[in-house]
Length: 262
Length: 57
Length: 167
Image 1: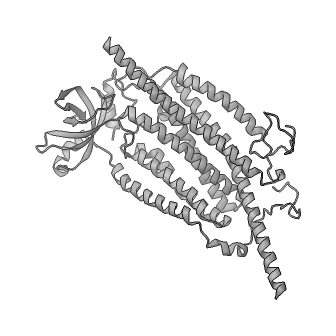
Image 2: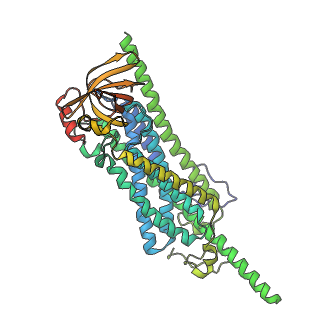
Image 3: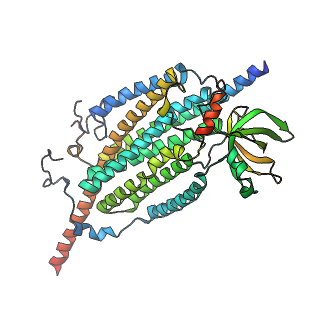
């Protein structure tokens, strides 16, 4: 990429000079655009509808190809948050704090998608948009807890105490994530148990491919979103620190001036 | 005949749910991506390029 | 950042990436933003409400055989019952009557209200309601399909497998 100074008009495909894009994110993003198009064809056109059986889902089964992948992406996001939170508490460097915060926001987006697609599935497959069954209840709890994480970050002004408190909350909130996942095994649930655990004859061929493709795609999408979201978080942290430094310098200068008068 | 029609109506409503789900997923992800990138550009202006290690400058 | 030159002395507001001294920020520690705190409080209330629901969720349904065994203690309390629909459901006035089975025990269910699209013979269902006064039928007011992809109509033997794994 040629460097473009603010005055110079950037070409259409040049990276924005102030943006969070890099060469790597550009390459990954381009691959993802093509992969999403292929995925949509496989998931919506090429793969067959769910066939025989008393409770065959027909075309509704296609919802699974996005529902399961976005759910896996949200687990991954919160796992990354927990890891980064632990690393922050150990290393106390702002990079880990940025990673944790960025991953929560991306994770919440995937959680919303999990709930939305699951709700549509529930409406047609079970006959209800929402039921307080173990899987749905624990997922709702997970969603609200991570919303709380973001609210906490906005509530605490001091960057260091914010990072510390957020890291503790990031770890506490993660306790619920395995509960969400195993709720269908531990308790009686309307929700079906994990399909990936027993792939063999229950789901086959192109249907299986669409599901696995969706999972890989969701994880790559998460990674790409994180590249941008992490950098945004990093820039925000730096700008905030800079503002703080400026304010402190001004205050010091005032103090010196006041002292000089007296 | 009526059974076939019924099946078609059922399949059509199935498709509207499927389409709804995919539109929500693609739409939300695209909107969120755009929002993050735009926020990045706005906030990025306040920071010199050398402090953004990924920047190609 | 270690490979970057130290730019702290530049006059363009270069960044100091070393952790700030605690005493410098001490004054700010007590400060909070109140609007997000209110949101945080509201979220706390929501969490409590969800946890109350979670108490129910841990025993989401009783299987048909358990519901029969606990008929005395259940009385007229509301609960959910689970079983596989046996035979064709019969419409009677504004309700539908059908038999569900689990663990070899059958229960007659009388459901009033809307039915899920996939409701038919051979499908595992969860019905919400209570035993009727004489304890002969289960009065259902909410009927849900317990979708289990394991189940296939062409393998009736699987019903038995479902029943053992359903717990």
